[in-house]
Image (cartoon, rainbow, N blue to C red; front, side, top):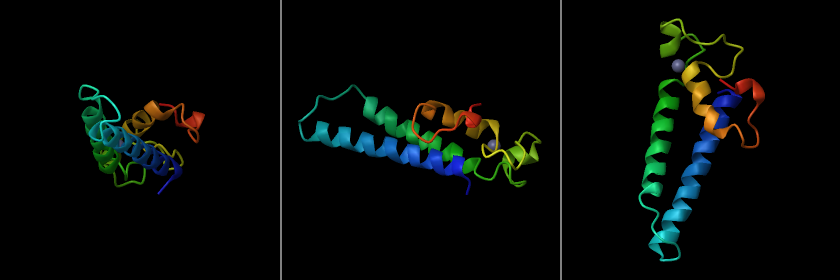
Length: 102
Ligand SMILES: [Zn+2]
């Protein structure tokens, strides 16, 4: 697994943990319900996880974007445009590298 894919998985895990904390605070009565924002956050994490899983082999020669001729060269850790775009919301987080920008 390459650094970019590891970075993306770690960011999604961080988001899920933050969402769990908010949900626990709301359930414990320590915070006000935020109008579905937490549930939308969980769904967005699921979407990102599914997309990442679907494109995990792109750039290796066997991913769906490789078959379409749209994968990035093997030396490009991003793999394909879909993975590169998945990293965009995390561009301000520690560990994100400028060369990963879509
Ligand atoms: Zn792909």
